[in-house]
Length: 313
Image (cartoon, rainbow, N blue to C red; front, side, top):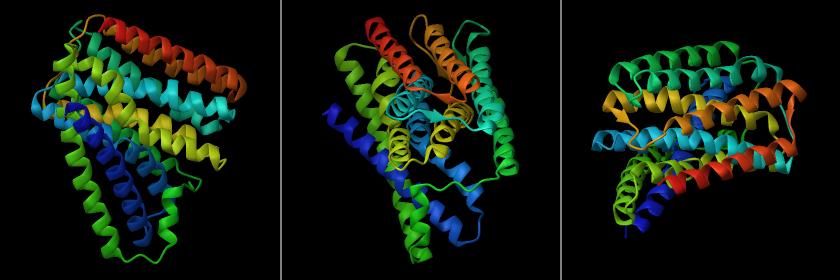
């Protein structure tokens, strides 16, 4: 029953996020909001909605270890799974702006999180940490709104060209919000139930099952971008989502309740996240692209990490 609850919750999260983002993007474009702002903000934030909702629900329920592990595991999956698999399918060119600003901002988010969690060797985030993270998210939002130069053409904008009434778009957004809220509750309840039945920590489930499940929107956007040869949005989606996950998801979640990691050697997970982020930067700088070989290396690293997490329990 818990497994069914988890799967249904993930489906509702993903489909609800899709309805919310497509509806919001179309609504914004129809009401005159610039495409650049909609694209660079909603694509990254929209694919982070499952992490945000599931983490908020877990935090409110008192499961403070789930949001932290969910975000760390999801960010690792975004690089070691989404970006890596895309590079294996087709080498990914990296734009100059991404190398100079967005990837360094992702590394900064990792360093800020590491500092907060390792400063007292307690792996805990308090409400004041959340306030600081949200301040960083405001800085990132300012960067997005002021530095946008190119129009981002993603499949979510196709609906904006259809003759859909604003009322219909509002209904779609409302359904999306309801779906992600219910999906978040089902996901957390199912994951906690599975953890209890298997006798493993909630962090293990959050680092693996929930992390990959809530990363499915990023995976879908990544695969679609590769198939349509819209490589420009691919890296920005993964990098932007990772930034949003740390600054926005953990920011709001830690305001709702104390976040903590309840597993030993959690520094390993944080170290893996930082190393993978640095690898993206190094690969981007050296050849201005992520090659198939580098994609294989990232995927292999992710595979070893998953094995380690499972063995650690």
